[in-house]
Image (cartoon, rainbow, N blue to C red; front, side, top):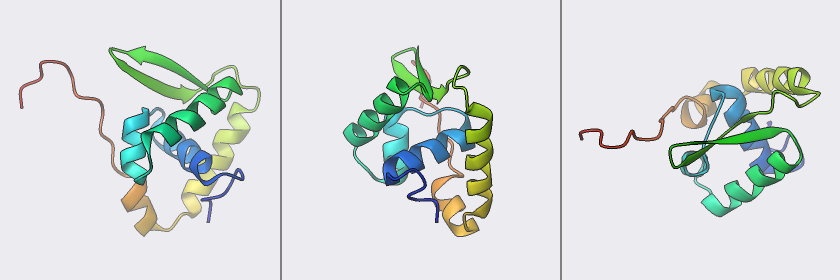
Amino acid sequence: MFDNLFGNTTVSKLLLFIARFGEGYPSQIARNFDITVSMVQQQLDRLETGGILVSQLKGKTRMYTMSPRYPFKKELLALLHKGLDSIPKKEIDVYYSKRMRPRRRKKPL
């Protein structure tokens, strides 16, 4: 239903993912939706250039979050959360319930 919310399926998935979890990194998002990392990185870069997202390095991982300076952040998040509420539970379980953070360096297996 909200797969093509912003005229681009990948952008919609990225924004819904970040709205759900607060942050994300390209390989995590790509793995979650089974799309290429390069496509995710390209769209994240576009969203960052547009001022919607900001990125920050955490170790060697570039994490993306909503920009606190984006003038429509509150409205966009409200729309995204409303969209998440209307997605069927089966789809939420598949795409929006996993949460895997980057592995900490030297963490024992």
